[in-house]
Length: 170
Ligand code: S3P
Image 1: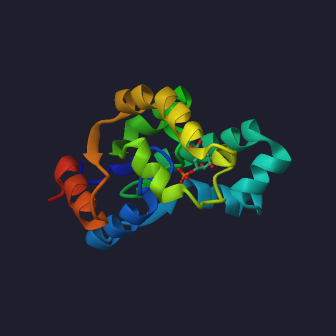
Image 2: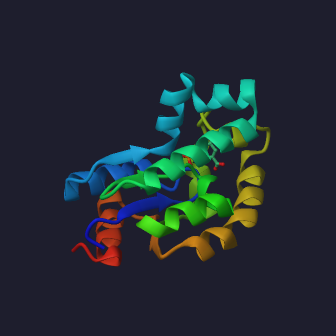
């Protein structure tokens, strides 16, 4: 485990960034976020990339970041919600990383993201339906990719502790 990266993944709103910050504080490891790195590299927000360049362009940028991060050590990586649904990213990340799924049911995701405007895939009339649909398509892929699955429907400090136990750094 020692030097392996910890990848946090799961559905939008599952808490990857907040739990990642907690884990980073607890372990002294650097936290990186694939969406923020893509935004820095591309010089625009995820929403604008989707709107102006399209989703495939975003996915290719995301893949490049995943490959880059896979070659580093001791990071806590908060991965965009779609990243670990693509075999090429799962393959790249699984070598040097522990893949941790933060599991949160769709109803809770909806509560958390009801008023969010930053997720292009959920900007539609019926957000609950969009969440349910995407969740149904992704759930089994997430579970298969995961080395560890933790319950994300609890305060962030508890989620962080569960992750540390799961990966063996507690
Ligand atoms: C996406 C999730 C987002 C971001 C993009 C696409 C997805 O990240 O990468 O909007 O396909 O689920 P978060 O999970 O951090 O919201």
